[in-house]
Length: 359
Image (tube, rainbow, N blue to C red; front, side):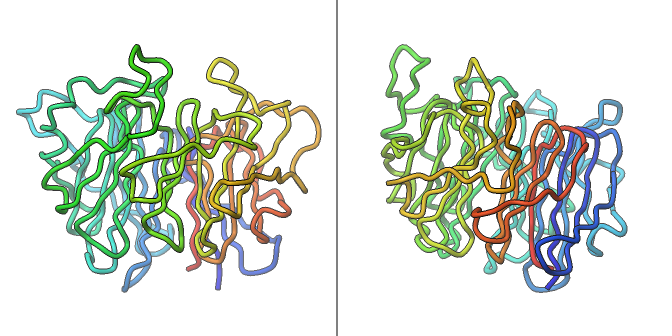
């Protein structure tokens, strides 16, 4: 089955296809040239596969486009499908996340935005409405802004219970809903915020990314602003799993799509030095839910390496392939769970996000 790898960059969307074997990638693009593509979703629910791309143009502003033919053509509505109601007094900065709902919710797509808000679509991503319950949350006025902007960048519907949803934001922390989004509660117990006077607050943590385990949907992994954590109770509480990593700072965290307990991250030195540790290009993997970590670098650059990997610039496909893109425009793929890597593309613009699927 062919693999499609969607690569969102600072200057457009690139699509890479592979028909089989570890090499032989064919790259097309840029689609939407000179726009920042911050989020891509591949919706594989029954029916034809649908691609969704959230882009931000310095001239036309943010929008979401869709394709039902794997990127051969795109549909972009005249009016941007995501927008804040007039009474909120704010305008959309960009869409940071697009997440299809579960198989029990055909047509539902979630969008996380800047400023921090959640939107819901019931028509496959062609139009969205603001989830008022999160926007009206009493904590919202105290949510801060990370270096990259204030954003809901993680949306995780529970695969077995459509009433349970996790969102995460920078800065603000993790929030949970158990009633389909009608109400929300902060869910950050055990996550440290060293940059605040109270280092263990109810909310206000700078979460960089959250991923859900493939085999145990109650297990979550979080990469924070200095902190790597695991939750075994669907986000109600968190424990550190940073021991064994060369640093607890970074942006992405990715759960293997079919191997329970397997998780990947890309550590950087620190918030003040956003370079790979020891200036080496290494992905770190745990196969026991974060109890132990190992570096993976076979096939990756051996010399001094300085680019970072952003929060959505690492991902995994349905067959267990793992991918990441760098801020210097390289994209790497592994077909053996990270044991070895090969170059998919080079000299692309700054890579902002990657999404892969068997189509």
